[in-house]
Length: 90
Image (cartoon, rainbow, N blue to C red; front, side, top):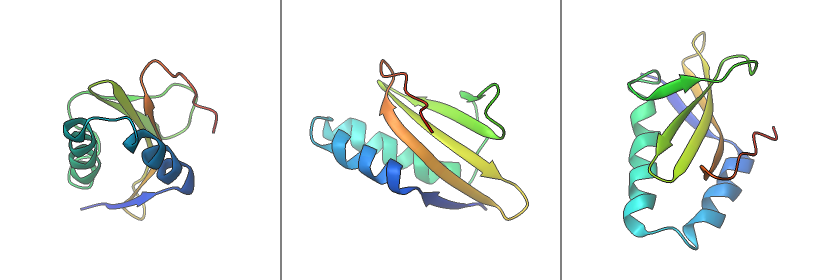
């Protein structure tokens, strides 16, 4: 089982999205983030090209970008954003 760590940037993203996100969508995002601890490379997850060991998963209108460190079994959530906001500015 992996440990999930949320970066400060992702914390800010989640706080910002909470203001206009539906409660159901927010809960789905939380469930997916928690589920990454069990299976970080599950169905629907895509590896980002040119970004090292980074992946993204879609949750409705939202995208979760994260990195996997298999050596220490850690997942770092980097960004949570709307899918139409193509930032990847990290």
